[in-house]
Length: 211
Image (cartoon, rainbow, N blue to C red; front, side, top):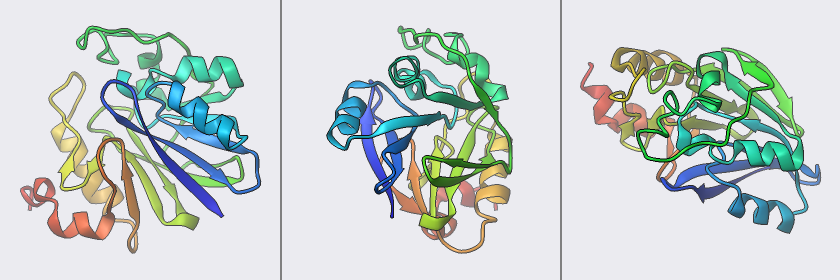
C-alpha cells in the first residue's frame, strides 16, 4: 500500500510529503521546507530517502534539500527551468524574505510527461508553469493523488506576482493540464488543506473568473 505522510515544515508551513510503499524501507520526500520533523518521521518509521522531488524552486520548498541530500545521499529532481533556484537566492526569493538557502545542485531534470519509479512508487510528471517557469505537479495514479505544489490550492491558485510568475501560464496549466485529467483525484497542495480535483473544477473562483 502507498502511504503519503504530510509534514508541515519551514517558516511558511510548507506541506512536505513523504511518499512510500509499506515494507519498502525507502521513501520519496517532496518539497522539504526543513529537515528536523522529516528526520524524526524517517527515523521513527525506519525509512531511508531514495529521492527528493521538487514541485518548484521557491526557497520555502527547498530549504531542507541540501541537508537531506548530504545525510541520505538522495538524488535531487527539479525542472530545468527552476534548477538555478537551488543555488541562487535571488531566483528562489530567499533574499526577498531576508533569508538564504544552503546551496546544492540537481542530479536530474524533470520533464513533462516523464514517468519515474522511485522507492517502489510510480510518479507521472506534469509540467505546470505559472507560479514559476519550472513548476510541476506529480501524479500518483495508483493512489489517485496529485501533489500540486503551489499550482493549485483548495479554492485558490498559486500567486503569480513574484518574479518569473505568469498569470496566463498558470491558468493554462490548471485548465488544460490538471483539469484535463480524467476522473477525480485527491489534491495535496504545497500549503493548507487538501482538496479534490472535482471540487476545484466546480468551485475554484480563481479559475471561474477566466470563463
